[in-house]
Amino acid sequence: EQLSQKLKELRLEKGMSAYEVSLALGLTRNAYSHYENGRRLPSLTVFLKICTLFNVSADYLLGITDAP
Image (cartoon, rainbow, N blue to C red; front, top):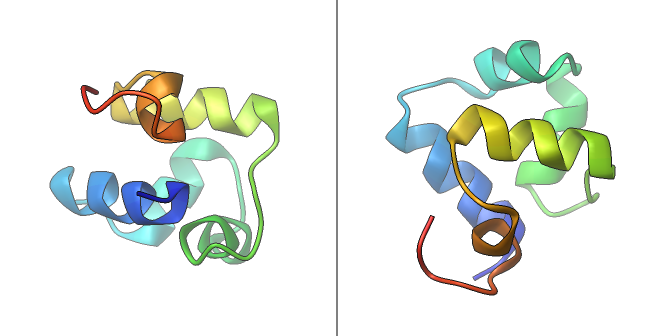
């Protein structure tokens, strides 16, 4: 499963809009949209913020393990 798909699934599970996630991460809505649509990859700093926000491991987001 791709990172972009996991981002969308996690966002929806949390009941957040893409705009709310972008605010929580300190990004523009457009920047976050690029990650969720697979057009760009987040920087390491943003990637770690995403892990913290959604309370998942980096391994889970990278598809190394199935357990968040």
